[in-house]
Length: 390
Image 1 (cartoon, helix red, strand yellow):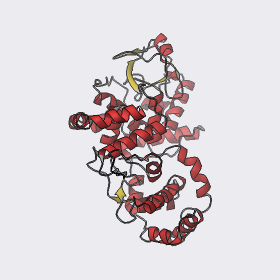
Image 2 (image 1 turned 90 degrees about the horizontal axis):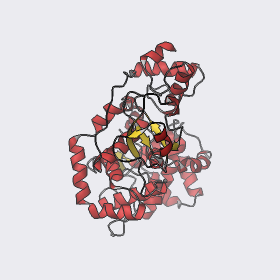
Image 3 (image 1 turned 30 degrees about the horizontal axis):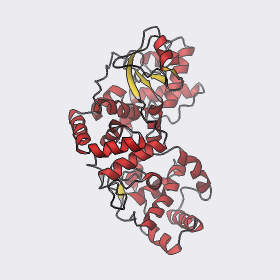
Image 4 (image 1 turned 180 degrees about the horizontal axis):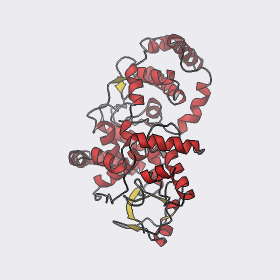
């Protein structure tokens, strides 16, 4: 179910490489272009030939890339599906089993154990299923495909670097459909930049070594901007008279300022000195959370709002946090209705991205803006009433 694990910093660096050759077209010619580029980077011709010798298009990768209907679910449904009692209990057991590793990760990188446990659980079910796609073929397929080649092309050359180090096999290395490897699913570039030998055996083995995987995940989160000792997400109750147009990730105020507007924590205390946003995944009548700076780091790991919010909430649960209050939100739209809404918003000039029936960041922003213009509560939650108004 995973989307793409892409650090934002990769995109800018990818553009120069991508500009040298195009995507699509004859696959043999495409591979020849990759090989030529690799040699120009300084890789030995013999090594390059061996690395690309088995490269093939994997149609199952393309099918997986386009089959992400799970993200059409609302937050409550999605969270309940992913967070089972078994997954929660296993996470707590893993926390005890690898207590020393989690202590070391937090001491060195400032990442709390619940955060890593949640990723470990959602990405591979605590290492139980790491994916069986050939990694090289996955990366080559997605680079050849013209949907997002600039994201995947640099990863091919990072895999080549790992191969030359003896840490990657073009024929035997497997992982997720989008090219991630190991228990916490890291792309080749991330492994090079953030791979850590956590168990001291001289190798970074993310598929078989729990210390390596967790330490590497912690280092990567720190690299992406994780701030030690700070919270990431907290459930709140919002007053009925709140200016709903201020909610959403585009608006930040100090938590103390939100408190002055009547926002109250359901449990514990607000981190009043930190900038924060109020997020309403299912509108003003549904669950409500205050999101601190660390929450935004999640989007460098995965770009789905629903996935990110669920992972952040699960991290709280794994550290003893309570079940969220689902409230009584207005009924959301079906996938077909969401596509209809997106088309209507696009006709009004809003950039909602692909018409895919998924309530992504662009669609949420457009919904909130048009709600405000129509004099409706601007809580960014699309309903049938809004669709009819449009």
